[in-house]
Length: 265
Image 1 (cartoon, rainbow, N blue to C red):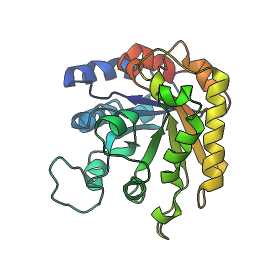
Image 2: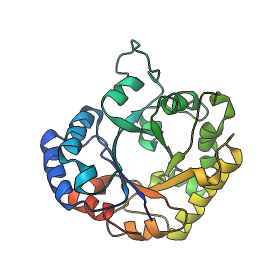
Image 3: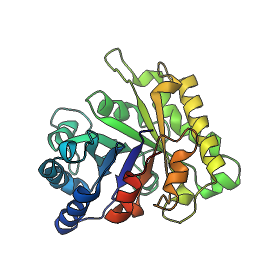
Image 4: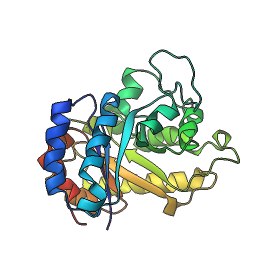
């Protein structure tokens, strides 16, 4: 079964790193999975150059290699040019070959304070309405998990995706992609039990399908993220309701990431 394998490089990378990464990746990638890479914005165009140079569509038989931006934010999401220091608008992402936007990651929610529950829906759909596929990140803290508030926290975050007031007649969404990343699992080496991952991902699909103005459960894809590596990826990807994985640290090791990309589930 085809899965989404997404790499979040965060603030890592260099031109030398990218060149060496794709030299190995090109020679060893053999997959039907959909591969997404989110490099730092400064290297989006450079990554795309290597993707085109290596002609992944022909060389690997994989028609699903895409590059995205990590910088989905509240500001400058209009398609027209505006004056805003440090901002990026939609046309810039599209001009650099972006197909995806990573939106609402916990590190951005907590550190940059750009997001607050109930405040992000409008800007979220500006991306969607301008032909960018959003991967909407949700997840609970360790304290919320311990207190049994995981579902409550996720519901509050998902309400931004489901708020009918953020839609207009021109918005056409065929698929929603949500990444569940428990904050306590990111970069810690700790992962939930497989049954717990399946339970939460099923909850997310059910909640969105029951509360979204028009998306049904079949239209909702959910990825798991948080300490995914080549040792646990196959088990996670094989678990019920898991449509893919969002990988942080392990995606920086090209051999490790390629192993995960090449998995057949």
